[in-house]
Image (tube, one colour):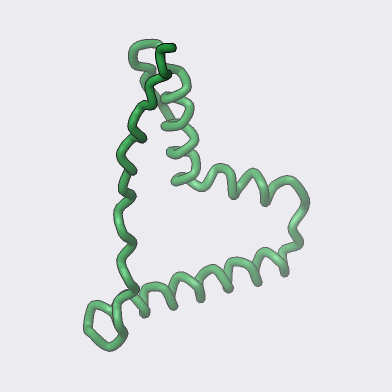
Length: 91
């Protein structure tokens, strides 16, 4: 995995790296490897993950076909205009 640092902006590069690692599932895998997982527990977890993925796919398909209503869309974030500056009285 490689991240380019532009204009010596290391903090932005770190954010990009964390996002890439999140997408790859590195953090999830690290959390799982902290302790031993019995083969039966691993099997159960993988089965439940597969069921969750299948349900999500079926739900998306049903929404596409019009069988289920689509979830409400989130409103885009709007920035509030800055407050007017209050000038100090010259006395």
